[in-house]
Image 1 (cartoon, rainbow, N blue to C red):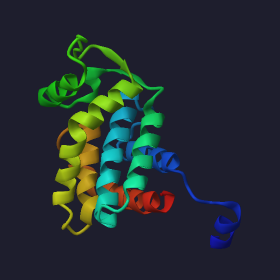
Image 2: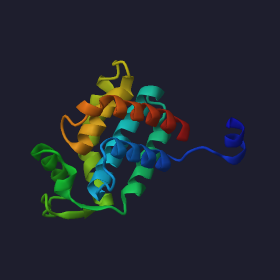
Image 3: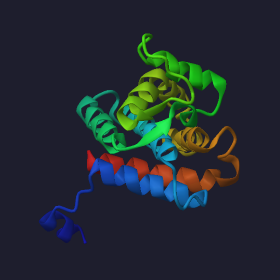
Length: 184
């Protein structure tokens, strides 16, 4: 098998790793037809978790790989459309996201936005805080991917939704970490 990968270029792309991971998480939660908002949330939370994982593994030396992850995730989300309110789980998150839009644009929870606008708003309003949160919880039994599983599942499906499926989601995030490092 390794011979075939070397000969035929079996390296996975970041996009395929992201999509496969999203599908596995949606399968765990029995979401057969995810909405654009769910796909957006999955993309953003996986991207932020991926940044934390790469920072943890690379000690800050993987800036190029992180940039590639962000750029490919941004491209992946471009065709999506959703209402701003569908991207959040509470009023505090809604305020954070809305505040990231230019002040002269009257954005509300019912405003429909494209994927690029949604990605930028979510990434820049929540990314740094979530990444730091994940990195401060990297000492658990499953390390950074273990805590990232909580952030991803609760981010996509709502607070506390990881509880019944923690082990399954954590295993998916461990696989995501391995495949992401192989893709970059």
